[in-house]
Length: 167
Image (cartoon, rainbow, N blue to C red; front, side, top):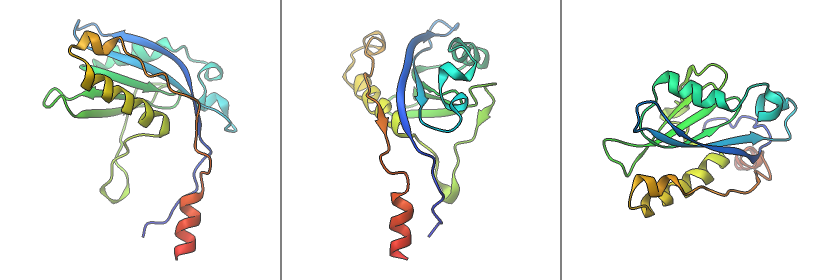
């Protein structure tokens, strides 16, 4: 079994939203800004102390030429773009970028796995998928927003304790 590594504390909170329509005239993304609060370096994980304007996300994605329809989860340290796949719109594609410079982040993880989402992203993705499924048009989809609550992981060491107890 793969060793369980220590995890940082995790409490996510909403930090704003923005509808982003990209220069191609067709691409549109709902941007959810997310803070991770309670960590030792708030400037890395919270929008207000990080020193960057939230508009930098729209500028970075436009510069990269991101295309499609979907949603974005933007943290000060990582921005994830979720789009409904042009090849099969019932599937979500995801790409990740460093929020500071929009260099690409590889989501590959050990054992052949791929990172999907943290808790905030999973909550948002669940609602966004339902909005997509329920909508009769892209415009109908784009007007619905996830109203997600403060989202803590109550215990960030339970897997480590479980795996150690079972060994």
